[in-house]
Length: 161
Image 1 (cartoon, rainbow, N blue to C red):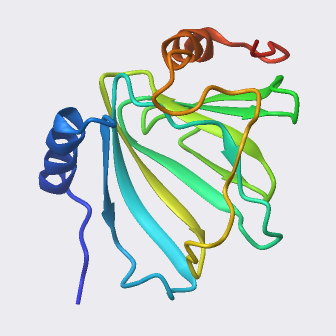
Image 2 (cartoon, rainbow, N blue to C red):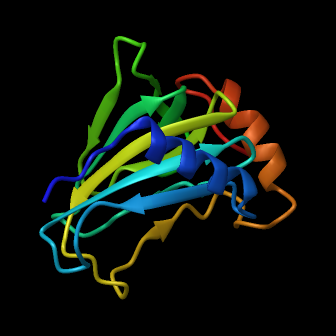
């Protein structure tokens, strides 16, 4: 069987993300949590908040590819200082990034409706820890709006807080 990533799928995901309380939606391409490589297409609408996090397991690398629109990838050190600021876009010279395990990062759309592909090492185990940055606001808290405004313009060596 073939699985296609086409405009119809991207448009459906974009609509779902726009209507979602979290302002994002995803489409799983892998067959299950046991697959050795996890693959998802994710639509991000303005206002979504992906709390800065990292995957501490030594085998949990992660790759992000910009498929539609512009998505900002921020990579931080442990104190919340921006180490890398990359715009992922099919129209940019950089449209993808692979992060090694333990990399603190977040993403946010710079255009109202952006779509990325996320590829990471499986299998997925819900009991595996995703560690959230203690210096970042919790999802749903009043600090999220401030963080999103800061993140959109943050430059390398800027620190959140």
